[in-house]
Image (cartoon, rainbow, N blue to C red; front, side):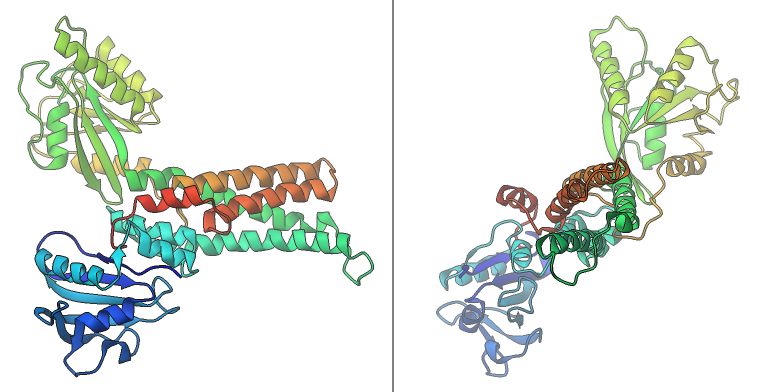
Length: 452
């Protein structure tokens, strides 16, 4: 039988409300010893999920807080065990004192993610849904939150289970015919299942395709602002952020190092990096800054090449545009639109926007251009993969499905085709938790916060 765990489920700062959670076989006896409903009844006599007002005391009966308590009994609780939750005033001192009394009554400190881990182990959550809990807590945009919430409700699990079930039906039919030749079982004809195999592969391919955008949706898009000295890079960064983050002067080489900031653009999170002006220099410090600028361009998902629109476009500017064209996503900004423009649109297929960091002219067009480079997949919320482990499992399952279809096309025997299909089932089982190694489970829940 598992032991009883407890943790403070809210932050460490002073707040209006603070919550302490308890889960395990001793949850109800522990809360009966420490929480005393105003009605005079024992807390364990109340029905599940009823919020009850009362007194929270220490072991000696001295008052700690006047608060609320609720209980949920196994198996109909978040963890699948008996649970209790104390909703106290949000003083860290009160919460810590309550937790100490709970420990003295037989519970122990919960590890990071242990409540959700127990929910998974007790069959209350699929593994993909359990991972979505951490994604929902860490969400930095409404789109991330909606996707994680849908995954928490089982969107990915439902899709994967449908594929898994179809493959299992095919495999079980084949083995039934093989193992029970004298039974009245419909003959197994592999070609009759080609549509199901094609559909499974297509679903996996669409799911995997969503990962690239989902990864950027969660982690943010590394975006490097690059250009010649005094092209207006730092001014553009400040204009996008809405405050003066970078020092701006008319002295070339003012920015010597990379400056990084996050910027929200609708459903996008940009990890903006303002870089040192790219030019030949004998200054050792400036040389190091230029080297970092070049590395930032190489690693960026988006390169924003800033060209001084009030000047001429020479060989160095054209070289910069060519480098932006090599990036995964590139965009040209003609800066200083408030001054007389000498630079017309350069010869490039990249999006090009004229911007004034002084007046704000063109900033809306710039934001629209960036958004158009990173559209959200046209799939329902919850079906955008954001998790590298899940994407790896889907990728391996898809490889096996493609191998199965290729074997079928080559006229291989059913056992060869079904061996590949069963490999796909094994990979999908890792995604939902049907089959998962202990060390992988440990790594998954290490990133959770204590109390969840």
